[in-house]
Length: 218
Image (cartoon, rainbow, N blue to C red; front, side, top):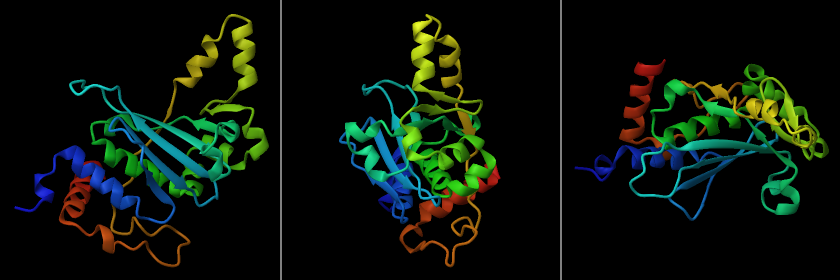
């Protein structure tokens, strides 16, 4: 029996995520915690994304993982408190019909979508708004929503008026991202000269999960 077959679904999904993060432009960071997973993505637009999945600390809690996407014009804007103000939240989430999948699978799908952010922007307007927003303007943006861009001034003004609820309501309405199809040419995006190198991820488990997802979600 192979070591791979001994892995539980979470471990298998994390193995899959690590293989996806071997692709140039997608990086799995060491979060120093089993309750937090961090992935950095460079989009084809030149913009950068940080995807964080987290869950409450506790071995016996069954609380599901939650994900948050933050965007930046420059990669280094993620790395210090001074420049962190030039990042903004993007209200994106995996479609609720796919939330039962292991967290590694969901993060891999989200990372691959953001890696091809130009295509994603044609389907989700808030991504397009983020891509074209100048870096200096990002300093005033709190989050990109489907219906509007929420700025820090809007939050401050609502709080001053004692009625921030209408802004908070928007902040809770994340735009859902469909799970990407695992098709044979999935790794070859339009405009690429060559498909991504799959040599490092040709495992039996990868093939099994690909076939399974195609059957259930295609």
